[in-house]
Image 1: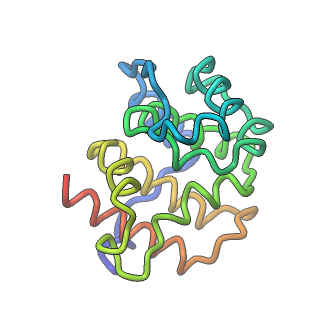
Image 2 (image 1 turned 135 degrees about the horizontal axis):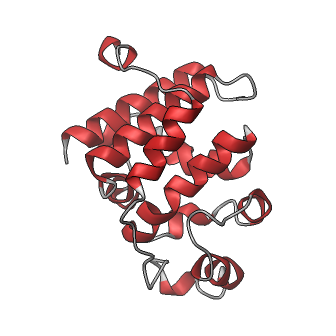
Length: 167
């Protein structure tokens, strides 16, 4: 874990600048979900995200569609993740949505224990995207409003580092 601790931590402004750089050339995907069988169950979420840009999503809808991150295909996950992070930075709010976003990265067996779809979503971010996510995890660790345990977040950061090595 000492390798992770040496990563420089960005402040809020640095993270927002990194998000803006990461999203410079991003294009909205035409299809956002992976599982056609989930369409009926998630119609409202699919409509919301299909009609939203990454930088126009809001906390109300993240709370409403808290379990939807899993259903994004890889391209949609890459497109919307910067918006999820930016909302968290701007509002310093932690809710069930962020639980559903981060919890799948905490497997008991490192990245070997990750759901293949989750590993694919995060790997598809590329090196810059995974670095951005790691820096965000460290920002959460230092946030006064975070209810996540530090050990939990460090395990997630370690798994993200392992994902980065596999890219």
